[in-house]
Amino acid sequence: MRKLLADLLNEKGANVWIDGDRIKIGDSIRNLLENGLNNSKYGIVMLSKKYLEKYWTNQELNSLYELEESGKKRILPLLIDLSHEEIKEKSIFLANRYNVKFDKDKLDEIVEKILEVLNN
Image (cartoon, rainbow, N blue to C red; front, side):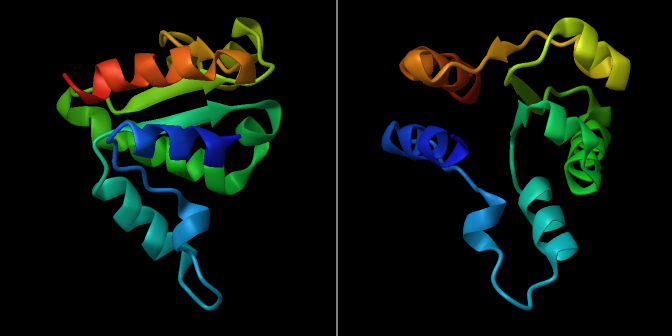
């Protein structure tokens, strides 16, 4: 799903960084993720139940919150089979964000919504 989304965004002129494409055997995951997050304008966060339970994804999310301290929006949440209540249980800050429900059948619409933010 995320590869398909990244490919569509790249086709439309966005420069998308995906950790799985950059991390090679023996690399420091932490260093690569930190560099990727620090050098990105936005983080498209594809939220699922698994995402909210994993250590590394929570670290990424915490880092994006830290980068937002200057007041500039950095987190673009996409929901995958999650309700508002489920998000609220894990992160009240994240539950307060406008989000888009991820639907493979509406991928073009999702890409356009993301591009609106990237191009402003």
